[in-house]
Length: 146
Image (cartoon, rainbow, N blue to C red; front, side):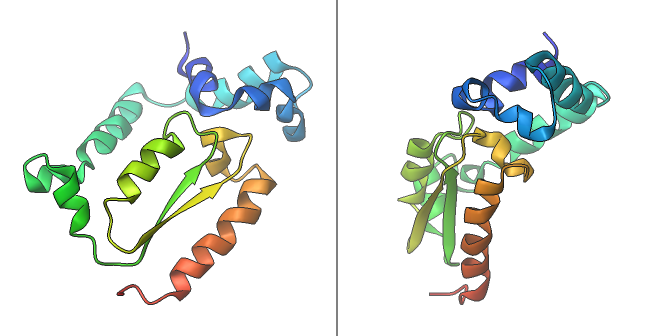
């Protein structure tokens, strides 16, 4: 299975497909979307680039700094922190984000609604952008130190 089709399973929500939200990107059919958007995005990538991204994701585990103790690592965060979750994200479910957010002192969980799921991060969902921009503006305007 090409990685684009695999990403279709977890990168978008079922409602994205049920409501045919891919039509907003000017695709005339689901097959057209899967080929024109997802396969054309992923297929040209060197597989080593994808492996490198996965490696960066795995290496970003902050608990490495505390012998595997995530609670200890996150308790050290001092800067103002918003943990921003997408309510329908299947790669980073909101309930998992909430668990980690509670370990960061003085942090806030901000949940953004997007039927695009994780793919809302791509900026093609105007509803996502409408919600994330003020959240990021508020965070950047705040003093980073409590």
